[in-house]
Length: 144
Image 1 (tube, rainbow, N blue to C red):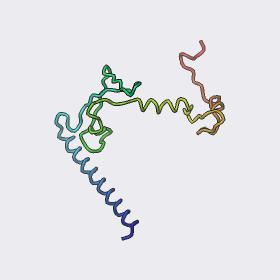
Image 2: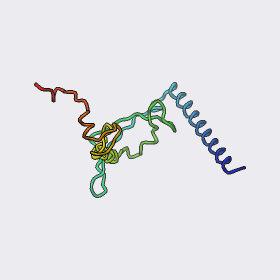
Image 3: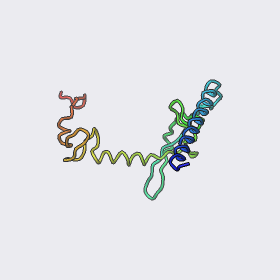
Image 4: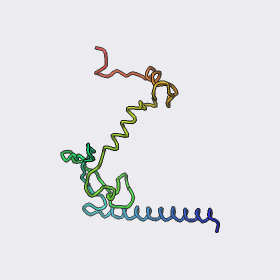
């Protein structure tokens, strides 16, 4: 058997097995949905947000508990994450999300704008895009 044919065959088998496992997980989830027991198949998990601070330490916000519904299965179903994706400490780090958002704020990437002189998704530089942007007055900005 040629190597390309063998790789295609192995890839097809892996895709087929994944589809079969997902189908079985879905059927098992639906069966348990029609015959529910407490915390099965859906469970409410309480977790806390945490953020990194200086010195490599983590500050956990215990005064702000968060709840989320998860599903007892291998794959996500009906828009719920599997319970195994929540770590056992019930602490979710959010510092990575903040640093990613800061890249957009400092780079002026909102609405396709880029730094002055660059060409963004709007096809113009940032100053021209700001001039062309519509202004909708609000209660705070409306002339009185």
